[in-house]
Length: 430
Image (cartoon, rainbow, N blue to C red):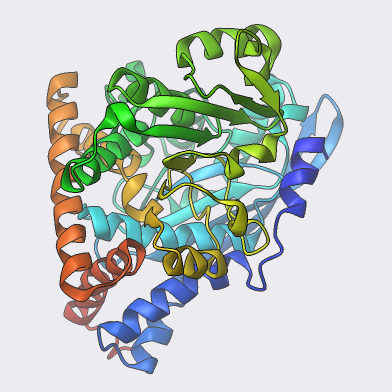
């Protein structure tokens, strides 16, 4: 296991497993909207758990890799969710992410359910050819459970459009039919959608801008720290920089770059490509710090854009931001969330903040079904409309019920899922 993987594995001191953390949010919401205990138990039970051991001959020798696909709920439409390649991709984590996806699709109001997949290995330790073999092996194991009307996969942590292309090819080779809509986040030449590569970050910007306008804040006076400088983190850094926000800190798995006068994300990206970390841009006022330092920096907005369980009971006391925009999935534990609420820190939850990705994945799926493709302007405008409408609904709920943004989001999502479950008669069949 790499040092980064060991560090990530060690960061889980919550008393609850990842699935228990999400379950708490969901059950609290179900209780608030008046769902019975018996109905709540049905909602919280995944529809299906698929697991397999991928046997792959790699350049490092034969490997047996645990693989999962959790299909959590499809009451509102076909299952939808990414596939991550990560050493911590165990069943508890994948269940948690699948449940989160179900809520997220309901909050943003796209007609899809929730699923998630994972393969437990560190892709940084394998070359491109081996990763292709593992990708194809995953589809060979899971293809009976996937499909345009069944379960639509997508990229997630350490998976890319190229990997989606391999998976699509393997699926179509096995099934003998052309079905680009069985997976999203594909290369454009294979039926991908324009705007998908920046959608997660762009959607989050729409939500943040709506909140900033509502609070009558000036972006030019807001200092932002972003944990994680991968695809989503680097894109949101550039978008916010262009919008007038001051990016005072950026971090990756190797360190934090901090400059109170502001950083240029494009320059940092160039330095990282050359030096392997954002800290390669240190100098001229920018200082290199430990990777965990970013959470405790003095800023107005903190954006966790890395992995789950980053803001926890043991470190939440160091948080100085007044606004947290969750670009990562499940970055804040329930224990930390409660403490932040007591301190009047606004947390804009992942189930809305990062829903731009699944929204444009939904658009990609629609385009694949129609075999008619939209312009980037059309995608961007539809994404903006979706994110702003969802934020307006969320904000109204927050103010009407005097609850946190997370509580309001989960109540909205679970109301929609519960209504679909009831209309389908799923409670009566148990």
